[in-house]
Image (cartoon, rainbow over all chains, first blue to last red):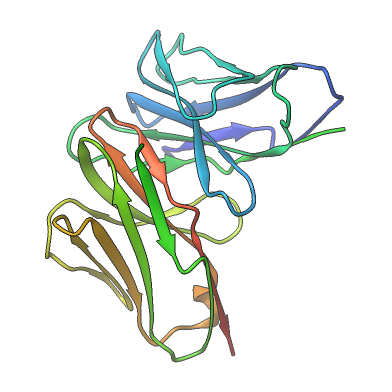
Length: 113
Length: 110
C-alpha cells in the first residue's frame, strides 16, 4: 500500500539533546513537508523540499535541520537550539503539478523533559 | 505577509444542525485551497478548490471558493457527532508550499 510513514509515534528526550524524526513515503511524490502543530496555532511550516537534494526554510525553521538525500525520505532533526521543541510534528508529501493534494503521516509527538 | 484566517475558532452545535466554516486568505501566487478534517492525528483530505464559483460536494459536505473576495466556505448539513473534529483550511502557493489556518474546532452534541 502506498503511503507516508512517520516514526516513532511518541518520542521523549532530555533537554539539550538532538533528536531525529523519520518520514518515509512510497508515493513517488516530489515534494515533502514538515509541519509543527501547537494548540490553537494550526500547522506551521518548518521546512519543505520540492526535489531531492534541495530544501527551503518555512516559517519556523530555527532550531531544526533537514536532509533530502533520497526522494522517499525527509528526516527532521530537532536540535538543542530549538527553544520549545515539545510539540506534535506532521510530515506530508504531494505530487508536483496541478493535482497537489497532500498526504500526511500519522505524526510524531515529541516531549522534551 | 501571507496569511490564512479561519472563523470561527470553535463552534458547538447539535446533531442535525447545518454549519458553515469560513476561510479567508491573502497569499501570493495562489494555486489552490484545500480543506482537511483532523480528528485525532493526521489531517484527512476533504476538498481541493482551484476555480471560483464551482461547488464541490461529498455527501453532507460541500465547499466553494471565491477568488475575487479571497475566501472559501465549508458547509456541513445534518451534522452528526462523527463530524466533531478540527477543520483545517490550507492554501497552496505557486512554490508548492502550503499555509494553514489555525483551524475551526467543531463539536456536535447529540
